[in-house]
Structures are given as C-alpha cells and as structure tokens.
Length: 78
Image 1 (tube, rainbow, N blue to C red):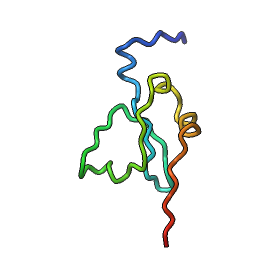
Image 2: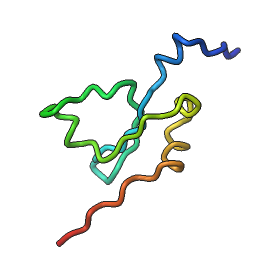
Image 3: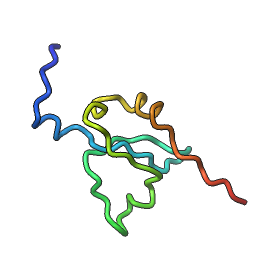
C-alpha cells in the first residue's frame, strides 16, 4: 500500500504526548493525542511521567519511544 504524504491536518491527529502509566506489571508506555485528564480524573493518578513529543517523533512506534525515554525509576521505600 502506498503511503501518502503527511499534511498539517494529519499532523494534528498524531499523538502529541508520550506517557508512562502505572500498569499491573509495572510502567507501561502509551501515546496520547491530548492531555485530557484533569484533577480528580481517574487517569491522573495512573500517570507516572509524560513528555510532549516534538513533531519529528510523533510518528515513532511505542517501542522506539520507550527505548529513547525510559520509564521513571520506581520509588522503593519500605
């Protein structure tokens, strides 16, 4: 299948944020199109770290972003 060229409108649809969330087995990477979680929203406590992606990185797969931006270190306190 031929790939079409990305337009400005398409660029707005690409995920803008790389987010590490609290998963069942540790931090899990995700890509979000908007930071649409507010104070008191269920997503907020699940977010460990987030980064607004530069335009050139918005198309990268999760695996590449996870290698580039590793998960935050867990606070291990007894």
